[in-house]
Length: 364
Image 1 (tube, rainbow, N blue to C red):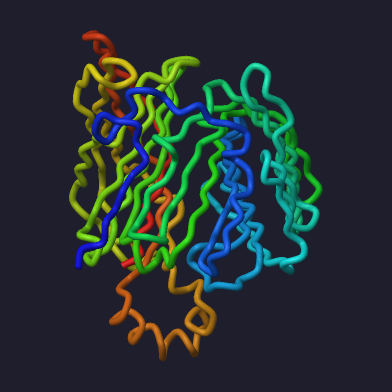
Image 2: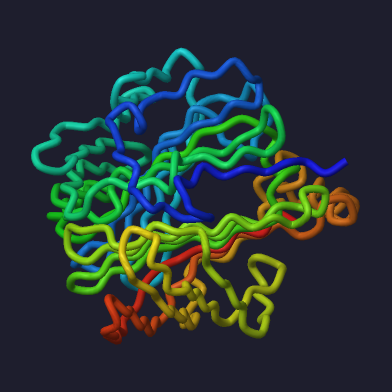
């Protein structure tokens, strides 16, 4: 029996003829009774110093079993390409969050909405294992979510996504082992929640965003497993300055030839292309044609290494071949890619070029 999948677009079709107004509560805690409930708040920033910093505050990671502890994750990518990552689990009682607005705490690590006039301002403060971040994200585009922000898989499983900060100016400080860096750059903030055993639903996803002087794009393509008929959800946002011009799921994704990566122990496409079609019944008459050519894999990772016992030298040697036969080769990639973007607005086309970060997670 086919499982029904529905997406929350306002329509017509898989797009938004009218944008959803994102409220502070959309970025707050979404209480749920399901043992499979998960939720996290994500921030990242590319700094003028060449550093990229990433922060996750997670009530429960969707890839971990029910009952798992809250997690704080911090990643710093240095200008020379090296990576430093901290993942720390906390007791359940160390987590608290508001259901009215973004105000989340795990231990001493916090994320909070600190302003809304005229656009949202968030502040993130985390400190673990010699890494301290105190960063303010001041929006330059309005908050966005595709439709009502959810995709439903059957009767009880669903995935929620809101982007409170599609594009933000980032200021503050980064402290690495006592050395302080004055932070200035461009940032992004989103929030996910849902319920369900996501590794049994999702096959893979691409996710990313890019910025030029006045163009901002956020995209994701999520493909389900065979028992969900390989359904693809493909939300994409295009903004020009402070105006969101396009909110659609009617996107064509094309992947280029594959290349093997030794650290992830699987292959990845050497380029991807995203295209939308003109429509007079969307937010505005705008289209994009975006190609991302992978210049460098800045993080390739075999996700089986994160599984207890399997990630150890002895246990991994014994169990990995068995688990691979059952679940395949789950892998994570963060790419640095060169892009060429053609944006057509009301019949006029402009071409932009640059570089950006994006990711691929393949669970099977």
